[in-house]
Amino acid sequence: MGVPGWFARERADGDRFADLVDGDAAPDGDEFAHELALVGGLRELGASGAPDAETRQRIHAEIAGRLAEAEAPSKRRGHTLANLAAAAVALILALGGFTLLLSKDALPGDPLYGIKRAGESAALGLTFDEQEKAKKHLEFATNRVGELDELTRQEASTEAYFTGLADFESDLRAGVSQLTAVVTDQGGQSRLTELRTWARQQSDRLGLQVERAPAEARDKFAAARVLLDRVQARTTDLGSRLVCYTITTGSSDELGAVPAAGDCVRDPGAPDAVVPPVTVPTPSSSPTGAPSPTSVPPSSGVDTANPTGPLTPPTGGTPPPVVATPPRTQNPPLPVPTTITPQPPLISIPPLIPGLPPITIG
Image (cartoon, rainbow, N blue to C red):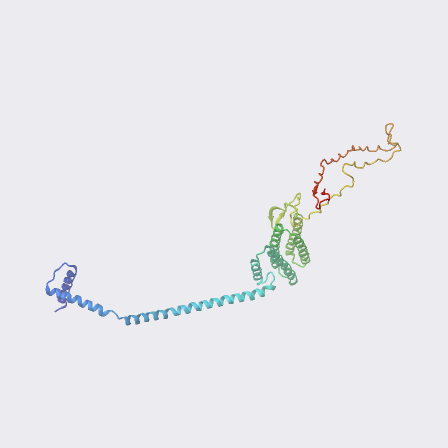
């Protein structure tokens, strides 16, 4: 049988089987048996193709093993990357600490000076107390003055002087502003005194350096000294207002709080207020109501005890002042007590022995 004939027959059998399944055809006996045999063969084919339990377990184990092998390189790769990152961070920290140590003596204009300033900023960021921050700013400003002195020995460039003086003024303003805010809030005359002394010392140091500095930088030195003079005046004005109710104007400038002006109404509760001691007047030895002593003018040679006429002042002098004698006041009589203390009652006890008189108490 050729291929077309076989294909036609198989197609016809398939159509009949489909009609049988759908219920659209009613096959005869031979056809029905043929179709049942075909269905049974398909079922046997499906059952024989399914793997048993052992085969399924072996396949599952093989698949799991291959997946584990595929994941192992990625885990090792992730662990390696983590180790490399940790090593890089440790190397950066080590190099940063070593570089920061090398920049300790860096001067303005040096390549490591920026790293030195970054380390100072980090130290300020780790300080949370405002007074301690102010002290660090003033400490850094003191370091800038020392660096400027070293620049004059090395005959550095003008730009290096500009950088050092700019950083000095920046730390100076920040330190003074924070310290005056603390003093205004908490008091502390001694802190202002220390700040005034420090400003005077730094001004003297800059005054010794200005003659050796380049001519282009001398104006910057003069501006820095003027700023230090303002700091001294600010501490004096603010210290004089610490005992007042109104200490500042409520506004601020580059040096912090601006002291108030005008009359000072003293605040006894201020931390720096000094309350004067209270003096208790000494009681008078004269009795109450007695007339105060009258001052007697100097004698003019005229008998004033029993005057017989008008008094005339002595020749060439001025009449003595007339002092009015206050009227004599009499003390009111003391009240006489009107209450009479009653006598205690009499107590009589009958005689204890016949023939004796009774006992009377009272």
